[in-house]
Amino acid sequence: MNYSGILDQIHRDLKPWLGKGRVASYIPELANISAERFGMAIVRTTGEVFRTGEADTRFSIQSISKLFACTLAFQLLGDDLWQRVGREPSGTAFNSLVQLEAEQGKPRNPFINAGALVVTDVLCRRFVKAETALVEFIRRLSGERGIGYDAAVAQSELQHAHRNRAMAHFMASFGNLKMPPDLVVDAYTRQCAISMSSVELARAALFLANRGAVPSTGEQIVDASSAKRLSALMLTCGTYDAAGDFVYRVGLPAKSGVGGGIVAVLPGEMAVCVWSPGLDANGNSLAGTLALEWLTTFTGQSIF
Ligand code: GLU
Image (tube, rainbow, N blue to C red):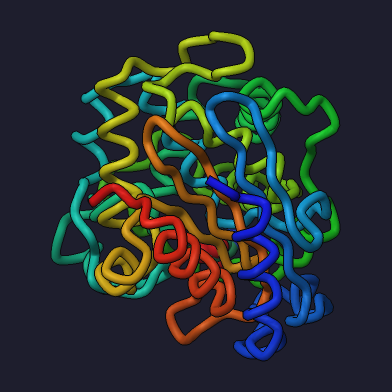
């Protein structure tokens, strides 16, 4: 498979689309980034790396952090995690509060904000500094020691985190948050502000394409069955309220973030990450979704 040629073709064909879509502006620090930027990387389980555009430029991973946080919490609690957070698509926006009251403070899944706050609560109970533990975990997954979080992005979001604070306090009122809600929101916001490049993100997600083990080190992060379960969650819940449309078009389990990144896995073969900050109405990268759709179309490879 000529991945290099295919990535270059995708980059060329995408030119008219770059700059379309809207950069997330509710986190002021993210509003400063041009919607025209683009990078994409494929990392194969064999270790080969293919890149196009700004594949080595770091960006704010935002909700993609929910994938790694959920993996760490699942590693700690196993199936007990599902007593506190569900595994169903929510059919509502990522930051919606509406279901929480009817469902007694149990969020639908770990990839909406409420669910991610519960996951972070699990990490806050286990680690003195949850965000530091998560950064360490991601460094191990990706093999990149230099990864960290961007304090300016975290600070910028914390000043406007009213909705996440409301959600955290609301869930605490149902007993579904064990640690102080504001501490959990602080840790959650910092984990969202982790900066990584497309290459680093694809490397970090590669264990999911490799039956739970990091190919370069052999470290078994989760067993093969758990890798299957986490990938299934990405497929059904990983791309906001558009997961159905996304999987129809792309055919891969994926997790997106409002920083414009999307990471996806093709089991047995590769992890791929694309970054383009212009978002569609659902909060997924507009050009990024197209790039992944073309990748699976041009290669004829998807999970189906
Ligand atoms: N930090 C963002 C928030 O909580 C993450 C949103 C996202 O990427 O979906 O609003």
